[in-house]
Image (cartoon, rainbow, N blue to C red; front, side):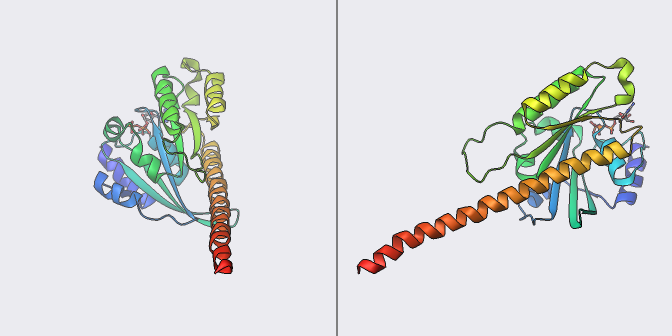
Length: 236
Ligand SMILES: Nc1nc2c(ncn2[C@@H]2O[C@H](COP(=O)(O)OP(=O)(O)OP(=O)(O)O)[C@@H](O)[C@H]2O)c(=O)[nH]1
């Protein structure tokens, strides 16, 4: 039954299921400025697939197969710019074995970290994931730009059984320099769309910052080379 639903979603989206091997190969391909890679991570059953599918199809299907990881592709136009979006939706097994996030950190330009407001343990996991993503680099690099992150408290329609307050989510996001929102994949289409647009815009801002640092880095290198070799030539 679940597999049939997944097949339906796949047909709607033109998504691709990848073995871990394929995915690892893809990570090292050079990204272009208009290629955006987004990883949706979080605890089990928090609604990662529901949010992704809601964004891509505007539909809420209710049950999603969770035995394989997927990368969905979407072409979109934002502020007049054509973008190729890839969204990685892991399966619970892959998340359990890959908590180090090494591959995800290399692959993704941004992260949507999801917890369920009616499940405190999912908030603890979201917190751990954010701390991992925001962990200072072991080899600091001037050109390094922190990946864009949005913390999402899903299942807002279950406020009557809430275990995590809005303030807690907001506080964690502020503390770790992330965006934050609470919403319901089950009941809201626009809010889900706005959430994805927010993170995509942050990623685009990061791209510009990286490009600026790269070009100022190569200018200073050219200046340095000129100073060293230029002077030497004069003295000969
Ligand atoms: N009430 C409510 N249920 C939701 C919402 N979003 C998802 N669900 C339900 O939560 C369950 C898990 O949703 P999924 O989208 O499969 O969650 P997931 O994080 O992708 O799950 P795994 O990949 O299996 O860990 C399903 O029964 C969904 O119908 C929501 O906003 N409100």
